[in-house]
Amino acid sequence: MTDRYEVARLDDLDRIPVGEKGLEWRPIRRRFGLEAFGMNAYSSASAGGEVVEEHTEEQLQHQEVYVVVRGRATFHLDGDDLDAPAGTLVVVRDPTVRRGATAVDADTLVLAVGGKPGEAFVPSAWESYFSAAPLAHERKFDEAIALMQRDAEVHRDHPALLYNLACYEALADRRDDALEHLARAVELNPRFREFAESDSDFAGLRDDPRFSAVVSRPAT
Image (tube, rainbow, N blue to C red; front, side):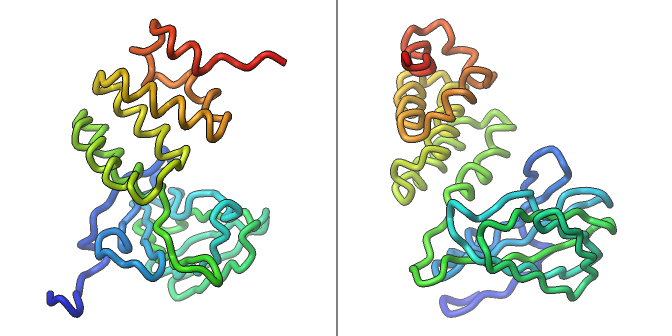
């Protein structure tokens, strides 16, 4: 490695579990500090596992290209199923297309590249809370919080980041911080009120009247 370039193998990247369907996120943009575009790899150790999480890009307005590097996948694009063996390019120009992919073969690996046309690239906030999740799973809440606090400088007032930060602060018994960030997340996006009502991460806050005030629905 030099300051000018770096070489690595996809199989040497970190593998971070995401969700409950076998998806593994292999960070590339974050790992190498790329600032010009988004790039990540995704894999599933078993056939039938998820290799692209079902989503649209309506919020970020990204165009995306997926490359099946290894194995075989079935892409699901607005209800259409596309067989995608190794070497297949799947180009999704329209951010409203609902996309996802399932591994047909074990150890399928997919590379994804994306960005918003006409604008300088800004890293997505989900990278922060996906990266912090394994630390929280190991109950290293202080480390997870520190990671997300660093990223909060880039993603000021991002409701999902604030909500996930509040979750870890609640689990770390940082009650005041958790309530402050949860309240701000709900203010920015009221749907997080519904999540907080049933989220077990906030079990330790439910006896606090401030929590009740945050999740209470405004009178109509």
